[in-house]
Length: 366
Image (cartoon, rainbow, N blue to C red):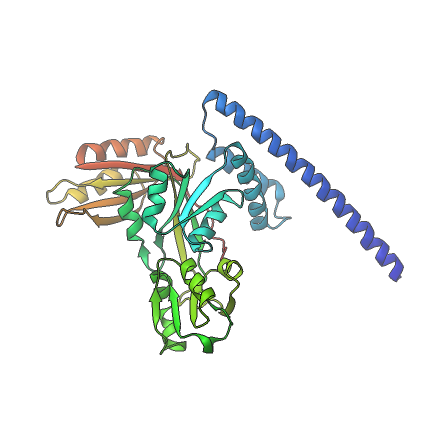
């Protein structure tokens, strides 16, 4: 009986090995076709990325799968395959708020996969500058958190640099308290970015009431500090644990579950229509009573769904503001075009920041 079981296991493993070999052969074949299509696009001066085509691929695969293979895993696998094949046509260099293992880094890997080259920057402003000057093809920046709200440094950079939004990705955030030893007794200071510190304030108050906190410019920087000082604890991502050889003290110390950060992909050119898009604008209203209400009325009359509005002061102009608007739809959609035309006519300032595919899922990568 035992001998028959061993034979069956060996036979099953042989079949799996054959399937793996076949999968590898097909992946190589797919990559070759992707490179060939990339060359044809070069000759025709066409955009490398077709969001509608990618969305149709995912929809077809999920439909044909009929939930036999876990859907989330299937999407993750094919996301890596599709992204790798697309980047083979032209390698992407992505600037992010560093150092390594920040949540921005994690969001970049989620969006672009592991095939892209990642370039760590010291500030969000630096990420914008890299893209604006053409030193990197893309940048990834946090724009809002479901608990703490807008990331104002990102919004302010849109007023300073000429870039366009190319995509978005949402990352469900789970905060870990880490240190070199893994012992909470060794921690004399807790370092992290100001937002994670705020998102964990109640846990810290309850469990480490006498321990001071130290705001730094990123979770990755906090992890670096913890790796170099045994008395510093960091609130950081799971990627930071392996990157900086740290030990977990407590997992999931955030005060509220479902804490999600939305990141924007910035570049020089927004993609074509995917069929499930978002359009972002930066506008200034006329200096008269009711001007903002006129803008909102115009969008309502065009049946445009306004997903977000945020005001930011104009530097050097007291009590003057610009407004960031997110609308559901693409600039190529007729009603979005009409709405933008109306806003151009009634606003003192109008800038289209980009139209890009909406993020469709909220899977955890941290």
